[in-house]
Length: 256
Image (tube, rainbow, N blue to C red):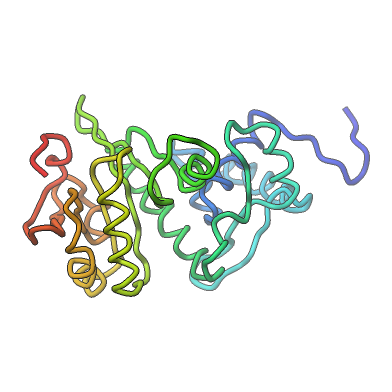
């Protein structure tokens, strides 16, 4: 079938998964998107077809591409992609929702890091379900079943047949001590999820959070992202309430 010049045909099978993943991630790299959509062994022909689709969607304003030093091509939903998904998604689609208050470049790095965490945990086989921040925000903005804050993700982990749901935050940069006091108050009021996991990129920020989040009385563990992603079952997580070491299995046995 021929199409008018300047128009594009959207495939429900091949194009919509790209647009949906880009929207839910906020920002992610080409490689991350490809791995998420094609977790099976890498094939050159599949990669070439994927790059053609991304380039085509970008040319028609459905996604936007920006080259960033250290990340490569970073993708986000374009204006035309937002309009298209608004008629197809079960949640409200707002492409700018992730950058309402955040520095744009910092948000891009944060989102790509967070998506890398998701990919690593999926490769490790410990993720049953991942509710993205865009989905959390839509629920909070347009539903009566609300979380107390817009978490980076709400993750259902699995260990064999056991499941445990955790609110996950990736803290790439530090907030003020006053802000963390407010966050502790929010999490202490949380009714929809009972456990919290903060991941950081380095030990210095990890130690700072142990102090900043000490006022929580809910199960809240803090870990270094690379260690937890590299070995979820073996990584040591520190309980912010007590300063004691915890393990992944304790998400499931009620000992947190």
